[in-house]
Image (cartoon, rainbow, N blue to C red; front, side, top):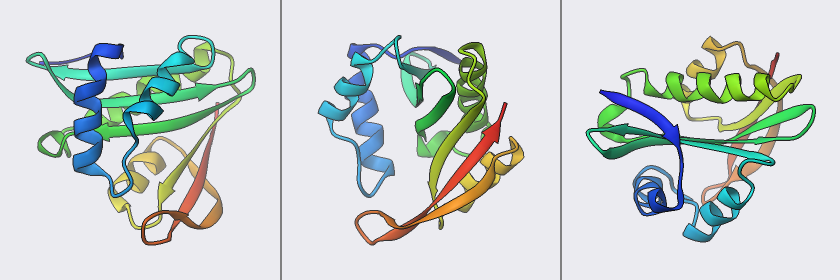
Length: 147
């Protein structure tokens, strides 16, 4: 059974391992530490656990009026199970709880599974960031959900 809980420093090794296995330009341990340093003031990070193992994580940056999905990652073996939606729903709920009027995110133009997920939740494309994702210079779509 998969459960969500707040990400803690002791989850970083598992998160970094997932990150390296999933993304062409993975976050460093220092990036995760920097993000966790903002919890709870401007950041909200979750992990998904299954049988004691971290199988996903998600993070949100939230200011007074706007939130940004910083990351969502789901272990390859769990992809397609709905876990990405569970994590996204939790981030949206936190943004709403904090009084944000909208949630923004960037997604690779070629990541169709993620784009479909975001569209299912009501996110709309508002701009394109040319060459945003490295390596490879893949465009990033900026998407917004109004709360």
